[in-house]
Length: 251
Image (cartoon, rainbow, N blue to C red):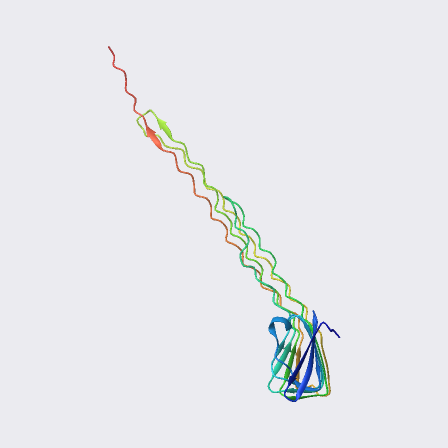
């Protein structure tokens, strides 16, 4: 048992000992009420509780951690839960890159971040008195895939050339070139994998007051496809110019 930090707490007629190390917290005693969590430190550590008569007054939520409760009598003043379920995969804050130059394709989205694996729970008790206790060790859900990038607009067609004629009919300019095809849309990334469920062990004479759930997390949804780039505008048509030449006078 760790000895780096020891705290002795006396609450009314009940006494218990808290021993805290870098990664674990041990709470031992005879008959006591489970102390309230010190959220700043306890949520990052595995928890071990050993008692003769233990009363829980609030949920125990320790994502991805291990919780072991070993007591003869477990009392609940209301329906509570002990959860070591994994965390959901983090979403991507932005979509994949758009096409960076005329006619460029949007980048494909990345696969979603995976959900984390759940921790484990072990409950050893002779009897649970009061309300129901729910034990949860579900894997975290996979994160949404990254959205694909948008395709860039196509290149602008070449301008047509001006053309002139010297006759009486007006010249016709050469048509402008057709605009380039827009960039294709980036494909949305696949959803992240769900995390593995944890292990729940229950050693109890009567399990009517206990509900357990240890399922793998659900896969994340795919990201949205980007938008294809529009075709580039056509080039400006050439102008038709009529030229009238003056005839020199004859002597």
